[in-house]
Length: 639
Image (cartoon, rainbow, N blue to C red; front, side):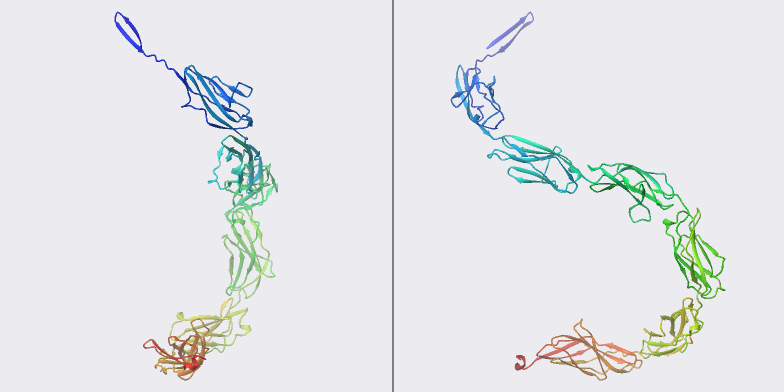
């Protein structure tokens, strides 16, 4: 222990320090030489030797029993570290660090294992690809057989995660870790690095992938210098995506078009180095939007953003109405028709039509102006116009800028005159409680100035007002009136009709519908089935006082619900039916009378079974069916 004393007239102060002298022989227990070191051939290794010793130990190295000296490839550094460069296979072996001081000597040994260096024998190569293609970037190595390589791929400096990126897949195995890129997109352009790791070394190789695709969208589209049929456009180029733009196309959209349509330009084909063009053949006074599309050898690119909407200037109409025709109407009328001009061809505001007509063979045109753009028909009325007089007709157009063209002249007939005669010899007869048949003779050819288009049959209940009358139109000289009331007197009249209207009515004829058919269906229906014969009988139906007398019965039968229906008529209350065996039958029975068919009984299901007899009874009052089935004799059942 050592003390320092400092004092003056004011006092004294002490400071103490302890000096320990440590003496120990070299000790490797806490920092031995690394037991095994792997290094690739041609590389270098640094073997550390850091024993604990006091005083500091003197370091030497030996390989086997031979102490090492410094050489071109071996150096023992001042701190005792052994450095070996440009390692060869012969450098492998056991190396011992020997530490010595005044208190003793100690050593520590480790092994140096020399492996073949890993080399990329087939590296990825820079390549061009087209959008949508799939490629493989190779990465194959030669390596020490005892080492397992690990392959990693980096794209633009980021590790490729094969579990999260669908376009990438590592293929191969063993000494190969190739990268497959499926359905390549523009975003896959960049630098790819293959990194190979072993426990001894790491190597890498890089390649650039250039992806060619359709051009990007042109930018900054501007529209200027607008006329009634042209507009000047300019734009900036977008990315060419590694394939130069060879030409541009221009598309337009209007409120009247279906989507975007290609339009004509000057020049007709806009080359890739030109960033302006004039669009032509536009319709006057129409709102337009434009967009530009770039094209290269890969394909058609995305269109530019639509331009600001512009409207072309107005102009005189250029298109005349099409399909001018006419005819028909009422007496004293000239009807003229045409197809209206679409709005996109009206070329300006205040659009309308000029209708001109004159009797055939005259020189002076009579004109009428229609200010409605939607007009498609004009009727000139003059009671003095003879029926079916020929007129020359044409229809023109105009707008606020001026008059447009007229259509070609066509010949149109004035209206016919209504038939002048009523159909003669109208005759009616009742068919049932709900139907009447009406017939008549045609009117004479001189009674109609034009083509007869048919007849109107008017009928109503006697005593009812004309407003309650019903009308049936037919083209021949007979009509069937149905849906009528039973036991009712109807009045019937007939009128001839042409395009001008209906002629005078014939004198009304009276006809009385028959009494309604019986409302009560046949009851107490019994049936008996023997082999393929069904025997039916039922009670006679007695008509009510206001119903038609029963004249017979109709038996309606079919196989199941979907079979073809057959009807058999009889005057009695029984019937025998021949039916194939092995099928179920549905049977209904109803009355027939002068007033029509009466109500049907409810359907009766009759099962027909081979080798069986059966019979049954149905009552509509109880709504129950009873059936009895009897076996044939044992002899019959085994035939």
